[in-house]
Image 1 (cartoon, rainbow, N blue to C red):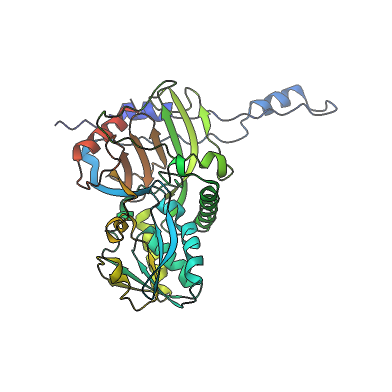
Image 2 (cartoon, one colour):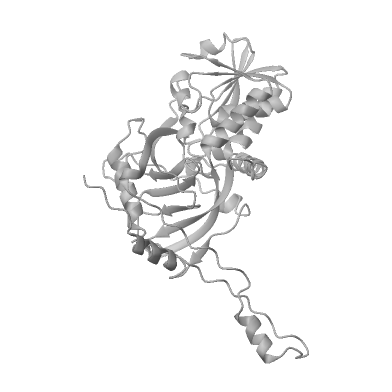
Length: 403
């Protein structure tokens, strides 16, 4: 396969010029009393109220710049996350898994829900099984409440499935089926989302930018455009519509951009800032805080719930994600495959893209520009074998947006 050539320098310069945004001019009402001169008023009206944002740097979207391709599965439950306690022998197991595509986004709020169940046992020592997004945040909150915590995990960073997520604030992503969005579920989800969102604002500005705000451009082909599905793909359920109804006040609104205000080859473009998690930095920050607070990690594999009852700690948090399907025989867990590719980092690219109908999602991160491909056959698919052709095609679709 021939590798597409990089955008020539003259074309890049034309791109940069076309990406310039017009400043938003604010009208100034005439001064009461008519003291200002006409010339002065004209000059003031012509001056922009804000400096124009800088032009968008182009993404060098060529397959030869792919440095990694990863696949993981999202643990979807139609009922939503399982956060509840059960007794196994003389142990209390607090389940905290099944967050679909909202694991990182909801992690702090989910941990707070689980911690209430942990504290109800009265135990001062806690075991957490799993070292991903849910396990680490639950362990940290427990430590901050005064508990001694030990993590048991088969895999550690950066090999846990959470490390291969896109890393974008998406608290409602495949979080539950619409048919299971009861008032009780929605109240808990909103509580988790707001708790997590508030926590993430306390992590802004730290070295390495573990969390940051970035502009995202949502592109579409106009009215009537729909995503194509494969006829033999398992049907996905209708997901619960939560963000627009319950947390619309969190963060800025999206804004439509007219022709000339963006450089993209798309009929319609909207801009909205979104939170991005630089997972390489952020996950290590969590792990470092856990160890600094006296936490320990023990490598161990569990094969059945009875194995958990052998732990020295009498209270155990089960944060095994998709692994709970085999460990606890939970058939409600459905794997949703996700494949990402990372392009060589471009520090000058600080924006993301979402192209509706074209299975393309792009995230600016410190460890590279993440290009996610979303395929019709991802639902109920536990195959974690990378398919390079899918990522190459996604990168080529990305290149087409800048032509």
